[in-house]
Length: 445
Ligand SMILES: Cc1cc2nc3c(=O)[nH]c(=O)nc-3n(C[C@H](O)[C@H](O)[C@H](O)COP(=O)(O)OP(=O)(O)OC[C@H]3O[C@@H](n4cnc5c(N)ncnc54)[C@H](O)[C@@H]3O)c2cc1C
Image 1 (cartoon, helix red, strand yellow):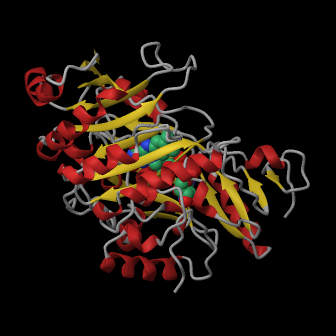
Image 2: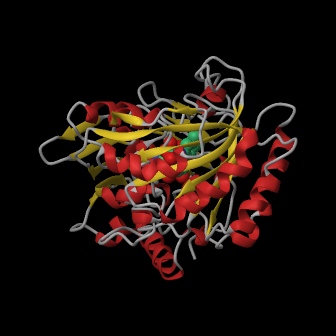
């Protein structure tokens, strides 16, 4: 492959190669055959043709928020989309159009000025394409479902370098597979379009207790979360905040229990919904009406490259014995920096009419346990968070939410069995030679 000046392709011998391999996930050790940075859709098509003409495969990459599960890339060109980062909104129609390299923060800010909101997640610097085509469960999830089901069109370059625009009327099968099937299994997505919601504000914030209160708060939150109305989506977590300036002073260096989230609707209804949690007397309560655009940073997720990593699992239910087990597994001296439960159900649990392959998430809660995966304690950290997740095995439902799964797993666990068979067929049709590599690969069988 030629290292042409305008196409920005780096091979292992190039001095820029090491930096070109570095992604958001600092602990992901990617060593592809080459790294390419297209500046346009035409560039990307040329890069794909160049790669295949040399017998190489292609792995599209956005930010690298889920770069961990790729595995061996020695026969693969990593095509990084960060320069394809356009943001547009048709405010009258309530539709956004973003390029492959777009991230959530700037779009949420832009939409906020027009009274529009999108189904973003907790990380403002996660890639919109990777997030939305892998599912996308955020603060409005229980009210409005997965982001994948708001997608109205996907544009991509397929294995032979052809540009395809797919929507309900153009290759509806591929359009179905892309909405939740993981973008990188079918081609290099250059842009997506999706439906927005019209609201300017939400009642959102966090309730904070000392970590010693976990035994009192978790059982009550779990009870409350099961029966809460769809208008509210929250997350419960036990977190050890490092003593670093990027966190607010009242959290920095402390071990805490936090429930954060958002309620859609008026103040009186929101206050009624949150009353049982407020009755648990948090030491800090920041819930209030706030601009919707503030929600992309509500969870204080790390921005920029991060040494953090998580393991996740879907829990079918969280009865009192499971709550006890989680408290036990996450207590004591542990390098787990965060043990977190995201509240699912509501519209996240119901099949979205006309939705894609992942039209719902199966499970009541998504459990995450995470810590720092770089440095001398990395191995012990992974051991500790594996232990936390393994302890909850009796309550898992055998399914994985692949978007948030940073370890290689059987990808069929991401889907209903019938849907998986259809995904296999669509992948065989769209990418018969297996050019594309995704982090959770749909195999060619
Ligand atoms: C801190 C953090 C917070 C998160 N919060 C949430 C959350 O609130 N809700 C939620 O649902 N998920 C969340 N996630 C998971 C997140 O949605 C996934 O990691 C998602 O894959 C990120 O997309 P990306 O493009 O940034 O990642 P990447 O690692 O760049 O890509 C992920 C996958 O998408 C593919 N891909 C990316 N771009 C393209 C493209 N243009 N064409 C084809 N394939 C492409 C890649 O090949 C790869 O397989 C979070 C993850 C992290 C690390």
